[in-house]
Amino acid sequence: MSSNSSETGPDAGPSERDRQRRALERRLREALMRPAEDDSAPPSSAEEETDEAPANPPRPQADPAIWGRLPRIPVEPRRLDRNLVITASRDDPAHAAFDVLRTRIVRAMRDNGWHRIGITSPGEGNGKSFTAINLAISLSRLSELRTVLMDMDLRRLGLAKVLGLRNMPATADYLRGEIGTEAYFSTFAPNNLHIGERLAIGANGRVDAYAAELLQTDETGARLTAMQAELAADLVLFDLPPARSIIVHFHLGVRVNDGVCRAHHPPTGSSRSGCATAGRADPHGPR
Image (cartoon, rainbow, N blue to C red; front, side, top):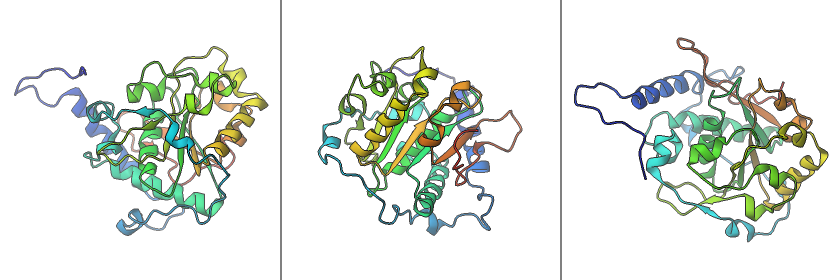
């Protein structure tokens, strides 16, 4: 496996990747570790360690063997680290911010009966796929939850690029019913990073020219509902298009999302960054 890092001499100073990692850690600490608007104090360490699945969540009947039949994605720690999937190895201290976000989302699920969360960003390149995959891996470590992460940004190959996957099936083909659940979704292969086996990932493998039209159909809504029942998913995360794109305001907004998390990557010097709505998901969908 090739690396995109460049060789530097002993006096070259921090590499560009090191600078990006430090800036990322600073942004995450500033935003994700901040309490939600109605919290009186930051989450305690005890709170972070006591994540719970929703109390008696309504679980649709599903084929219990389907998860075992999903294709396996090989876990390559070096690739994940290079692509800033920091919740995989947990070597970067910034991973704790996603555990805080996980705690708040699980609590919101329990309190509100939510099962679907959309993740978007103000524009392209602001970190929504980064937020989605890191949050999904953090959630996968809760053994009582079945989590699905689905790439709904049909004009980009966000999750496939982050995970270094090639020749993946297209989300559009799945939404049109041309391929089945077992052909589209994958799980991580057994690994030493404790990435849980109850995480199914649908990574988009092809850009679709008719994304806006496809996401507006009733058939797509029905397909997503059937998918959630087939996998008996407790929580479905949708990696949505950027909020500035017109297709984020699609017909399925209310159906797809019980809440929305907006990932922010602000101009240099701004303190508002990370997932600014951590624990404050919007029940009205994208706006």
